[in-house]
Image (cartoon, rainbow, N blue to C red; front, top):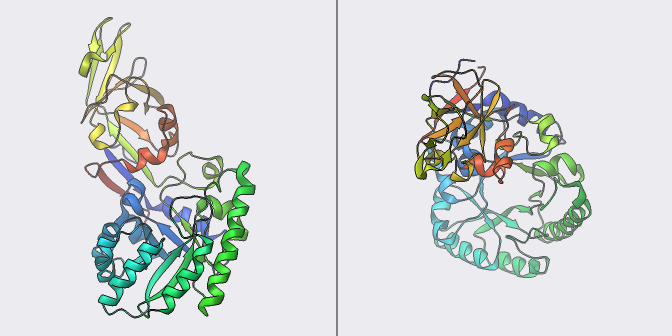
Length: 370
């Protein structure tokens, strides 16, 4: 592959297909797969990711907010889209764009029925979220009677799925808690299905749930398929591949004498003859200031180059002392070898925060073998 000439985020559709096929191989043929493409496809590009996944056969998409779903529809995505955290002010727009809301409380249920009836809807698909231990969003088990009464009083909506969310399915030390969540959800979803008289989709597993709890696959699973493979957990390292790689170039090289300072606020002082490189990337592109002052590093010709001084809005300086490189050489922020998790961990955060912060102004480049 050619070396990059500017800051780019490479989106590797070959890796995306690999991840999709790997996760599908863990499912029974009848189990559907929902791809979560919120937050710009976890920092890459939701439209690029969704178009490819739709082409290879994904069953469902999910986004966080209605605006994200509208963007997919306007890009031509036809696959069903679940909106995980809708707000009442957007319900009419959700219906207009055929987006399916996650109903997680009595207030949200009441408000959506009100809007659906005003829009003369019949059997509009909605999804019921139950809280089984994450304690973030969701009805409780003892809300079932209220839900059923509300459903019986209207023809405007129909339950498309029942869902919950696992809190710690990647942590084997939390297996007992996770099994408790699964059993709680089985009980509640079974009661709902029995009382509905028809069988909606049932789903609880996220990616680590797919891999670690096959007994909880139910009839659909969810995965942030573009997010994993960044070195977050050992199991992802072995099987899933990063979809995105962030790369930049050396714009200029400087040599600092002992005692010279660098950057805003003179935050770095050279303690010897130091060679630094300036690259066209900054906190406006998603590399926060907390990566500065040697809390973060990039890779130049296979060697770590720590960030020196404060991260600027559009530029970052790295220490390349002892590294054989020149202006125009490629700088790896993260890829399949130099993982997002490694740079994030060194700065006291997680790869998800790094990935989802990448600015739209960073050019997206698609890698495909077609």
